[in-house]
Length: 193
Image 1: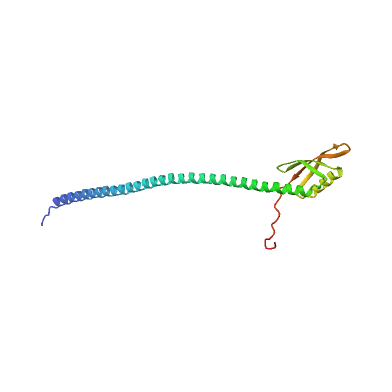
Image 2: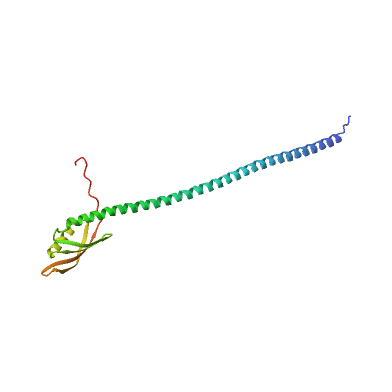
């Protein structure tokens, strides 16, 4: 019978398996190192890109904050201009209102029988001082004032007799009343005129 010595073959096979395992392990470690290096470089690129985008966002934020400040300054200027415009409109309306008030006062005066010596209007309050021929003229004047729809709370504060000439007496009076802003009369069509 033939004898075959398998021991050296098994030892060689065992050495070959150990070499193969070492090669596979070394190759695995090398591939793992390459994969980790690649992953690290990808993450480093992402970090760099994110840092750049954060820097760009900060620059954009600074630029936008400057624009917001500019917009707020413009809003404040616009608000001030609106307030000034409203004041001008109010002054213009009150200027016209004073003219309309004086016009209405000339309509309610009793002509030739009374005279106003002082007239003051402050806001909605009006105070009149004047002289009339008699008490009936003062009463007629008060009645006319009460008939005007923009006037309310007409009150005769005081009336007194004053001697103008011997035998000629006039009545001094003081009247207070409230008023509302007088609107301009509606304009007539120019085509009708």
